[in-house]
Length: 112
Length: 113
Image 1 (cartoon, each protein chain N blue to C red):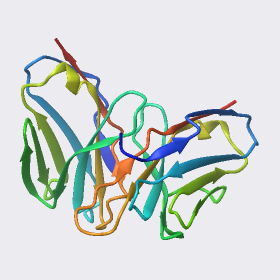
Image 2 (cartoon, chains in turn green, brown; image 1 turned 45 degrees about the vertical axis):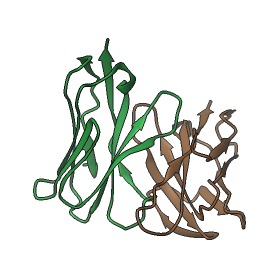
Image 3 (spheres, chains in turn purple, blue; image 1 turned 90 degrees about the vertical axis):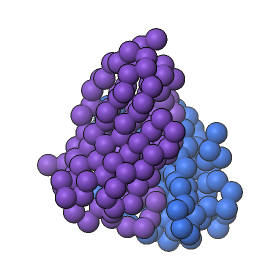
Image 4 (cartoon, rainbow over the protein chains, first blue to last red; image 1 turned 180 degrees about the horizontal axis):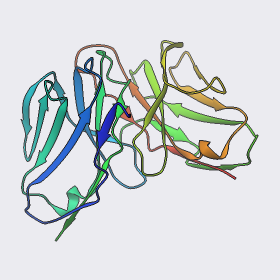
């Protein structure tokens, strides 16, 4: 069993839709939860970071962590074609923002 | 752009050969991690270097080795290349301190034939 599971998609939605992306994990030691966005032929870029359980909002993006269920989510409101990319969840047990366990990524396509 | 540069961008090698990939970290960053991203998969942590010392290693065999230089740039070396080593190799640099983000380079696409 992988430590981090993520539905690979692809997920295709119309412009303006609300998108929900999810990951589950098995290691209860994970404390730091990140969402990265990766465009084709580029390295991942950090979208959101959350520590422990709770919600965090940044513009059109909301990250949720439920440690009791070992489940994290990223919501994108009013999705735009420019949001089309692969979204990767990442987790770490240490306060070391450069030693992550990544999910396999969900490919999102937002149609105009 | 993140300020993290990797070279080369693409590389084709033959099975059994050795390869060296390079990463220049962002200015002010003293930590570099290397990740392997197979096609359609998420990045997998290979190892991390902090101030020229290895600081943690993922589940990769010893033929994957690394180095960090006094200017904090880094190399990833892979010996006895196998077909399954074909992947995008990413490096990410970061610094110490609270809420420090890791910035990724654009990666080196390695193809082993």
